[in-house]
Length: 591
Image (tube, rainbow, N blue to C red):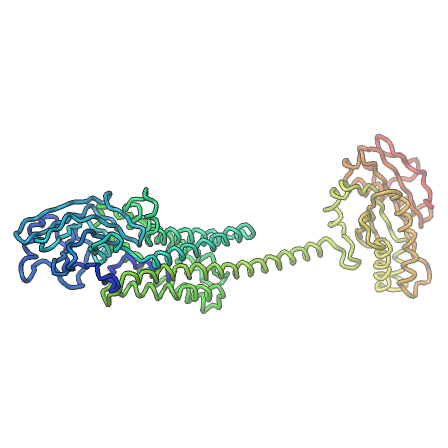
């Protein structure tokens, strides 16, 4: 992402002037970078010379790729309160720091501290060392830094008289802590959103937020309140977490934008950029002493392609009308401005107090909070899309399982629900067929026939009931499944209501439209063994038997258990129940 990539330019040289509100903070007079062959005595001799050969006494030419960096603090800059007592600088990896006090008589007193002996201070991203005793005759202090891994380690180096003078003010530290608190809320939002909507971009945003929190905690120096974190750990964690945040942000961008907001090529390029950010700058972030000569610049230059690629991705999405891209553009504006400021100071275009770095942390907090709002907006949009899709799926399912003419279940819908209905106690299965329905179509037309079918369906459904399910299997054939007491009598009442309802709803019919039915009642002990086909076959046989014996009647069977279903249209003479027996009424009309 553009903002994240630009912020990564923190690794560039950042020149910071002493804060005017802190007059007891002393900046170096000169600086230099050499090979390991140059000794403290050599640099001390050069410092005594009027031209100071080998030293650069201006705010230019800062470099951290040489194996040794030198800082010169001259006595002329010291106040009348005595010599300074502490050295502090920005947290960054190094092998060791040697302090050499140069007295007026040419004698040199040294004290050497390793990286492991550095004391991180929870007052900004700084560490400090106690200086060797400086005497009245001390003319200058030379600081030798072996294997410096960051230019800010040199440009932000200062001497102070009191330990509390080092670092940021309480207000500045409180501001960083506030930003850190701002980042906690979006993390809770991500967890809540992911529980409801399992989208990968929410996980990526959560990783991004965690990385940002880690970066602010380490780069802001607050991690130093825990004494078990060494300078090396803090120095590596800050840039490493930022690299992870950058890479995850690019991956998040590719997943977060709406479908069609990116071309296939741009999406692949964005994903590759995310992987690059995590792998390459992440490797430089470890600041191994073996890579000291190039890892500072390597970390910086590794982010340059990210600026152009992700900028192009966002611009493309905006051109394509992406709503999410608008949120991203707004969210990244503050952090882009803060990053440009950091870049220009790093290039030495101008100088400013190190407190200007606070704008970076504030912009990071603003970016993450606004992106959380963007995720909430995207969350609602996806929910609306999914709800619409679910509604459409239900409508399609209803269309596929409902008879379009009558609104009843069709055969497919009934078969799909059959086992559940049996399990719920619907143990009475009545197959109903309109008598001589073909004559209605032939004499009065299909429109009247359709009206008769609709009226029949209305008669079967009656009022709302939880103990009845009706379906149209096709043509003039209907099924009613019932449960509860007197189910057979209720099924017969529904059959008898059909002619009355058709006569009331369909005008112009000269004869009543009656119905014949075959009904099966299955005891609860055996209904689990029944299949739709088996029940249908038995009811179909009874229904045809009812038609053959005079129509306008119901024939029924009360089954116990059976192994095989009879043929669909059996010979009516001498027909028996299935194996296991059936309590079957002799063929008759049920009143």
